[in-house]
Length: 477
Image 1: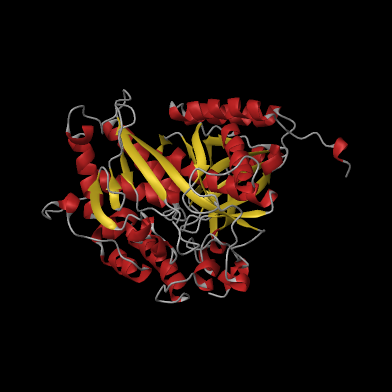
Image 2: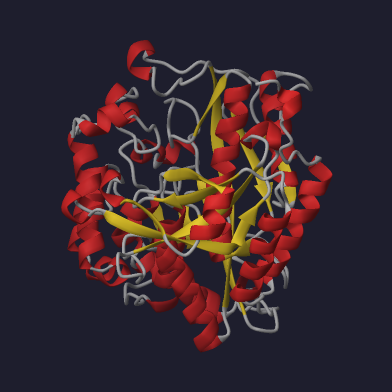
């Protein structure tokens, strides 16, 4: 069909940024959901150039799923959207497959047409059970409820920002083809902060940054990372559910841009041995209804309050319990190597980057706790749930000198699985049913990979990686 006959929504990046920042402000200001829904439905009705709405949700492992609803159909059926849950790993068995999708109208995004297609908008969905109740394996919904409960009970706003590292490799589908090639090829070998204008890595970073800016990320800085072809693009903090949504969008944008440039964006924690791996340092804080940062106390040790230290002590106490939730893949345990600034020690420090928890320099606004032992392939909603629920409600060990005790995270997924399964805390965190579903998924993946990691990346740890989606491979399970 001749393109001149189409009249689909294609907005300039500046206009997209204005729309997304306004939507972000409404979400941050906790505008009543019914008011936002009314406004969004009116917008979709009035804006004739929109043809479809892309609805996004995540499975138990954090893999992002997307489906497009025709706009006219969605306007008529927004309260009765269903899908087959048995096709989603970790959701429902075939005999009870139907699940529902509710639209989270506050989590509404305008995407650049050159990246997401013309005439589309994006929205996150909430997975519901057949009877309309929250679905227990939809960790986004569990996290959103935790955030709402903390605000209702204590006036707390849970804040998070993530520093997400990734690699860009030459060629399309480099991960899917790894079992054929046995290697990843760099697009740049410059290293930390070094990428000449116009080279492939800088072109990728610049394009991603432009898309993020248009989608209201409020960028802070971007740069090549320590390893060759590695990048990091930082953006502002947000309320915890919105922050986790942003992680999913960040990785989606990176993959889309890389594909358009004939490259592959990879968030494997350690795709190449001998160089630094990918982390997702997770910076968190809690503020009250007046916006006061409850982690800040001027003049105290590290200018942190007792509330902040108790928060970090609970994470240290349960460090081994939740390790599998923060490092969810076979490959992630390659990254927990102390020779490459990896945080494998269950301790807290203001300066030691080998510590699981770090206390960065901050002021009254930015004072925070940084959880460093998080891999970028972990389910972001699971990460946020683990960190905040543990930090707020977990127990504090009576181990002497807890913050500097000689304790270490596991160096393989099997030990992490054992710790996870034996932990009473993870049962409280997820519930017995979801905990077992998650453990079974991780066990199935681990059992298809070499038990010992060895000194080079094995094809199986890439091929069976939950982010390298291959329907044919998963159907062989």
